Image (cartoon, rainbow, N blue to C red; front, side, top):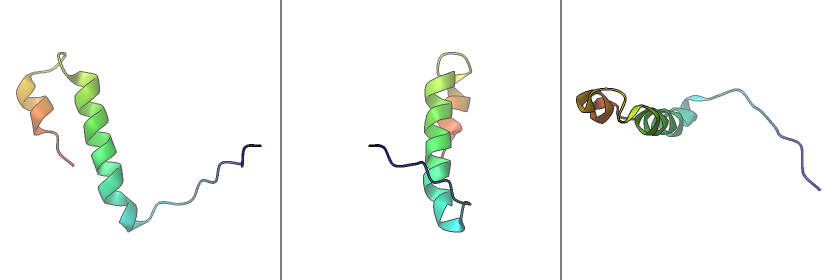
Length: 44
């Protein structure tokens, strides 16, 4: 049986992991569509 999904408000301690996920998803999504300097410049 699956347990229900619990969504909580974000806290400051979440920022490093969220920013890393954002940067990684941006790089993988836009690689090849935007200049390489922009893709490599996105950091967490």
